[in-house]
Length: 116
Image (cartoon, rainbow, N blue to C red; front, top):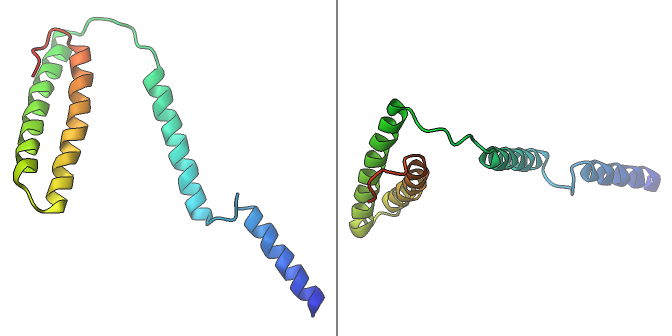
């Protein structure tokens, strides 16, 4: 009986060790996927792009998106100034954060675009 318990205990330990630290295999897979996605994003962001001028269509798109993003940020900031509901505040803050990043990216593409 003791031998059977020892074998079972050893098998459990080996199974847990195979899960890279004894964690939940699903959680481990999620961590590995997140790490891979982060690596891909960093690698993509570090790719050097040729500094070719934008076509008129591309520049028009960037200017239009700049204006829309600035309007969205202004609306979200107005909501943040008065909203009490935490869900609305989180949503508005997410808009401010994401659109501010997009504005910076678009301004880098269109250097002559008017600033906020």
